[in-house]
Amino acid sequence: MSSATIRFASFLRHAAAAAVLAAAGAAALPAAAQDSRRVYVFGNSLVYHLTKTERTAVPYWLGLMTRAGGKSLALEGRWGFLRDFANELPAQPNWEFSTVSRAWKGGDFRGSGFDTIIITPANFIQGRPASKRYQGDNPTGDSPLSAALKLIDWLSAAAPKADIFIYEGWSLMGGFPPDAQQIADYHALNRGSYHKWFVDFTSKLRQKSYGQEVRLIPVASVLSAYLTQPPLSELKPTDLYEDDAPHGTETLYLLAAMITYSSLFNEPAPAIRLPSSVHPTVRKYYSGLATAIYTTVAAG
Image (cartoon, rainbow, N blue to C red; front, side):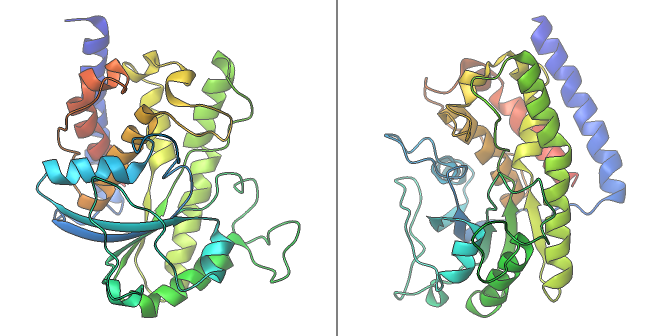
């Protein structure tokens, strides 16, 4: 057994123990696994990076995972920013994937029966509180919080029974490619003040949206937790990121999908056939990572 394997096994044990302790005092995901989701994603390129391959998209991998796990998934989505989402209603379908069924029915949003909504804030607005107005051209005086609340208010009629999730995309990167200290600082940011912004944002939405349940999909923070531990710490930044936005490789969107799957379906991502374009370390440890990621996500 290699030293990396031993360290990873130890990390899994620590993750499981931490999850048990956290679950005792934190709000976890619903206990029952979900069998189906009809999803609309208000997204950006940290959910779906448009390239020559569908594999740089979280929904592509979700489609493979749900098929392997015996789940039902239908999904639509669009790109944009929070203010676009709130001001360009009713929402329209812009995405399509070979692995995912379409959810659009009856020619409109309301008739499509969405039971799950994913909302994605931009990844460069976390330097200011979510209640602060956007800087620059902002004739409506919106803040990230007020824009999201406008959208949720519309959703209360358009998809009144839908579960609402906030997608925590990874933070903007200061330069590319980062050196060892820069990537360490980057992961610390994703696990620290950047993550806290999302936790506070989700909490405020929950408080101000008339009891609507709003939950976080903790992609950035969970990614950075695992990317700083063996065996994923073996991956170079260029194995994951392409630029300082940072758009990602197929490997990064696969890992993000594993976190998203656990958040939506309340169980580990099932085994799927992984192409050679996915980093070999992730292919080797996929099953253990899926269990560890679910344990971390379920702990809240």
